[in-house]
Length: 460
Image (cartoon, rainbow, N blue to C red):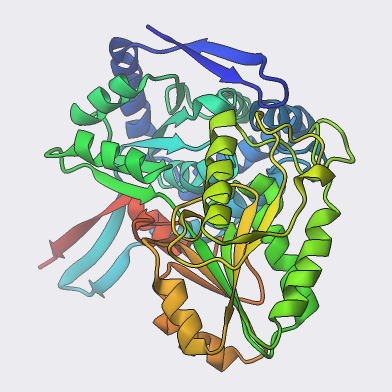
């Protein structure tokens, strides 16, 4: 047994600790989960959906408390009100489409044959969730998994240690049968051992590329299905015909919100040369208006990063880029909370950047964005594709046909036109290259947590 410790980025104090479950503890939980799941899968889709939605209502009832916890655990300002709006949207949509998404596909229903393909729950779904959006990312898989008739075991990131308990309490209040949902506290070694022992029937992991590799290594030879959302370096392209004000406001927010700690946050921007100077000037003015400080204060618009080591990585990328010729436009002195050796990090815009710099190649996951001038769609496409990652891409233009043409040429999971940093639950959430594999949400999200089963019934 080891102790997991959540250290608050606000002041470096210990906010919460929990002792880990042992391998044997989890094996007992798995036994109860499988027994409960067998009965749960026999209940109707509408019954299962109703309980999941009731649990979301229970989370909403304590959202003020959760918002404070999130601020303490990972630094997001309380002014933004937590994540319950998006949690409701995603869980609600998945419940709305559940009957149709899970309905059998009928091939023939005649006097002679009934042939159809059913979708059956896989069994026990293991969700390994990240700290940056502890409720939004987790609900992407938890809601459809339970609605589809599975049991769920949730391992949350140590940085957001209490989120799993909040889910567990909400499901208990909603009347979810005992044993169907467990919040786990696990060491990395025990996590790997459980995966290697084929303890789970589907694994949903959101985290780093290295974390995804460890998951795959642990699962090697078990044939356990896995969905992975890993790193990102999401680009935006501002064409000559873009609405400049809207592009600046949306893209800079997409780069800086949550201190840049967003899976689909904007990390690099390519602007047509005719708009470049105006875009950069307006972006600079906007970023200089932010207030970096204590996330518990309503006036704070930018909180600390979740951990000092994350802030130090972004500082290193900025420092290396400037040494290689980049120009930093934001004076850190405007943000006195950034002492240079804490989780509080001043936002930064870099120009005169190129793809030889880590800040334009490696995931930053912090409040920094590089902006490059381009002269054509072809140049922008080449630069957007020059990445190991492929989660989302944001295109700014008044021409939807052009956006579709460019979108087809971009190696990415989602193409946005005139928006960014948003997850539409009706569209599958997916990525390519080192961003991962699989699909969550939408109708396709139900395919991950169910398996097809064919019935060929001869009547005469």
